[in-house]
Every structure is written in C-alpha cells, then in structure tokens.
Image 1 (cartoon, one colour):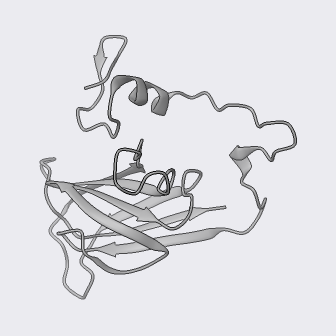
Image 2: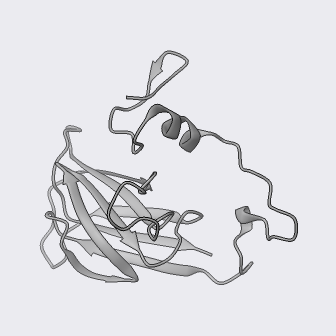
Image 3: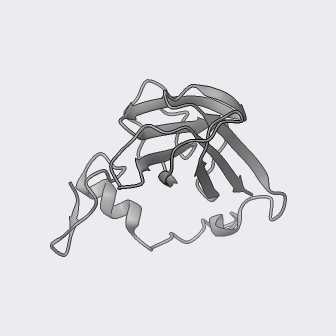
Length: 153
C-alpha cells in the first residue's frame, strides 16, 4: 500500500491512500492557533477521561463505557468508535474472553482509526475511533475477543 523511501509500509496500514498514510506517520505536530490551548496537552489540563470496551470475536459489544459502535472489517480487523475524541489518548488492548474462559494465545495491535470520513457517520466520527488487529501466535490474522481501554485528557 503506502511506501516511504522505497520501504513498504505494512499492507494493512489504517489509511485510505498513500498521502493519508504519510500524513498519519508524520512526526510534525502543528502549532496551536492563537489563543487556543496546545493540543499536545489536552483542553482541560487535567482530568483523565476513560473509554473502554469488551468486544466479542464477531465485533459484538459485550460491555463498555462511552462506546458509539463497533464493527468487524475483516479477519482479525476491528474498529471501535467512542462518543468522544480519543486522538490524544493512550490505547491499551489485550486478547481475552468476556467471561471466565480464556482466549487462545495470540497478538493484538491498536492505533487511532485513520481517516474515517468515508462512512455513513461522517463527520461525527473524526478522531473517535480505534483500529484493532488480532493475530494467532504465528502472526496470522485471526478473529479474537479483546478488551480495549483508552485513557485521554
């Protein structure tokens, strides 16, 4: 999909095109507008906000806090949208069943959901989504239940 300096970026990069992928991985943070708070530090300058979800293999929301919607996009690929902006948050996810059973071993990755303006819910979902990918222990995409928490200010 996206390339940079001749190196292929992971083909499941969460972006609709090369320009969006390059913008998403850019280390540049624009300066705040005159009279506005610096976006790197949050608006409140305090108060951690918490968003979380427990998701079943088919993307069903089992329980959660401030979850707008969930969706399975492909084998082991999910998106979870929350009711507030999570773009400055820390995303933590772990593979795990919603009840007392355990999920088989595997791997999970998370990122801010890039460029969601292509769906039915535009423009309300900007910066509110998290992209999740789950894999088996050999690294092959695999549907897994997981727990996700986002902490932001």
